[in-house]
Amino acid sequence: MQTAARTVTVPGLGIEFDILADDTIIGPAIAGGSWEAHETALFRAHLVPGCKVVDLGANVGWFAVQAVLAGAEVHAFEPVPFIADLAERNIERANARGPGRGVLHRCAAGAAPGSARIVLAKDNHGDNRVLDAGGAAPADLAGAEELEIRVERVDDLVSGPARVLKIDTQGSEWLALQGARELLAASPQLALLLEFWPYALRGCEPKALLDFLVQQGFTLGKATAAPYPISAARLLQQASHGDPVKGGFDLYAVRGLPFHVLGAKARLKSVLRSLREE
Image (cartoon, rainbow, N blue to C red; front, side, top):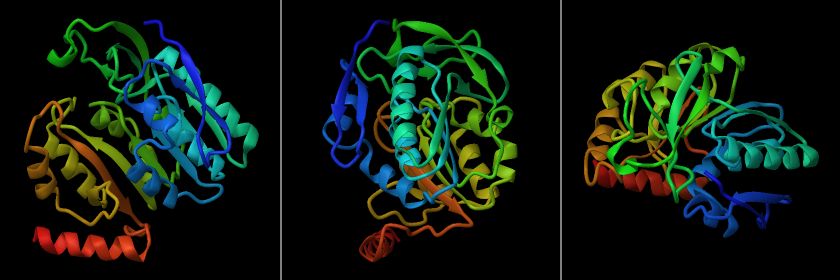
């Protein structure tokens, strides 16, 4: 796939930022000032100078750059070469600005090292999905371009403890977690942002993923402007409503760290929302 880059100035970021010129989702959002505002706010709220951050499915590096500029040590994973090129440039700009330091791993995060095929969405360059061995592309990406990528375990490249772990791998979240068990064990104080998309999930059933996080000691919620703790059963129920292809949401979870980090107003709103749900 051939695609051009475009450099934009993002208000408040302090550095120039490269996006994919023909992207229909992430690129325009960043050019407009932000990407995934609620997730970004939660992500940034848990950053402290010197902490370690792991960004799986970094795409062009939006979250990785935020962490570097906040003074974190960042390990970003992005397997698609033309996207990784932009992520690397963006992270290098952030490194030059400091005070943190980021490194890009040009691979996907998985349960075991090796290689895999990834199918590339034509317009939404954030929706690239790793395929099971011998598996076909999902129906909504039928006929899309595929390429071979490298897969590595997080535990073979990054040691803990980490403070923030972000996993947005378009269905490979369970496999990424299985390759990061040592990191999880070494990180008693951890904030997690994770895409929960049952339609695309590989390697386990949706319930097993949520149960695993609960067993790991995480308090679960949704990455919203005012998150509140939600049971795994309720999250699973919510994910089952509506169009499965377009469904799913971003999870927010913590263990050993405060759940409410967005201020008193957001906390009050979260309490009211939780009472209405009950």
